[in-house]
Amino acid sequence: MGLGVGLYWPATEAAVADLTTLEQRNEAFAITRLADHIGLGLGVVFGGVFIAVWENYRALFIIDGVSFLVFFAIIYLAIAETYQFSDRQPNSHQGWTIALRDRRLLVYAVVNIFFTTYLSQVQSTIPLYFKSFMTEGNFSVAIISAIFAWHVILTIICQLPVARFLNRYSYSNALTISFLFWGIGFILLWLTGIVTSYSLIWAILALSLLAIATVSYTPIASAFVVDLSPPSLRGIYLSINSQCWAIGYLIGPPLGGFALDNSPQFARNFWVFLALSISLGISILQYLNRLLQVDNQKEF
Image 1: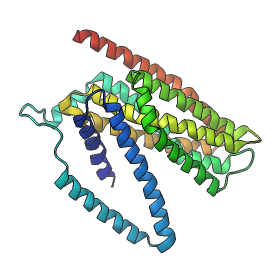
Image 2: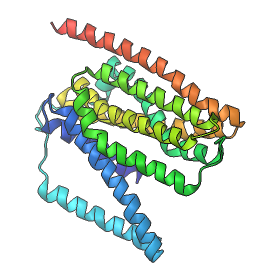
Image 3: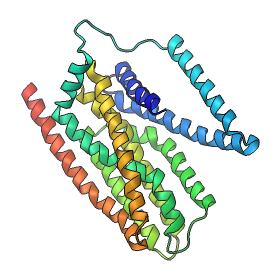
Image 4: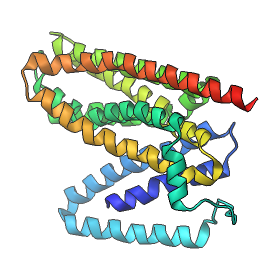
């Protein structure tokens, strides 16, 4: 399954880049992410209903397997190759060498790991934090599920409008805005754990800000990588972009778990630490922006 995901993401994003112009790219990736979120939401809903009614996990996974065979047939029969290959196409070894020597891409990868580490906290750490560390009283499973359902719904609603709004900014400025939303969201999570009243409202506000932080990051990040890459190396560049997700999700859950395994005060202050870390991410983005400006000056 991991191999399947690793083959899917870069190819999907490269196809989107091939089919769009620079002006269309942010919104095109936003539409792709919108489909991702809708699919994830439907999977959770239909999977939950199926298990609740039939209590048969094996049948559910058989249906999943058949759905991928249908997916394969659609790709094979209905979707044309989007990239125009040429005899001067660099081989795989040359392509990876070029990508790994691109200082702009490597600096961007560091920034991207910050974002993916933050994203992993939403899925792995925050639910456990809500369950165990509320001063006002621990949230029930039903309340936590409702908060995260709202988070998913808001993510779907805001994906296209936020992408359209951020079109007016450069990639680095748009990602800086995303960092700020992440920082404010983490501060609200900290407040959720220390207030003695209305903690549910603070929790909803925190997840709302993190939803906006997510949708302001995901399409911009892919479009940024495409802009950095030569057309013939988009797949390799986007593979490195996908690897950042793997690294972020390798770092994030153990980091959150370490915080939650300590004292309640340590667990609550963990969100302050994450909020402060955005200053480092923004500094790296500014350095990347200077690298891009130097490259642009060389081209002229």
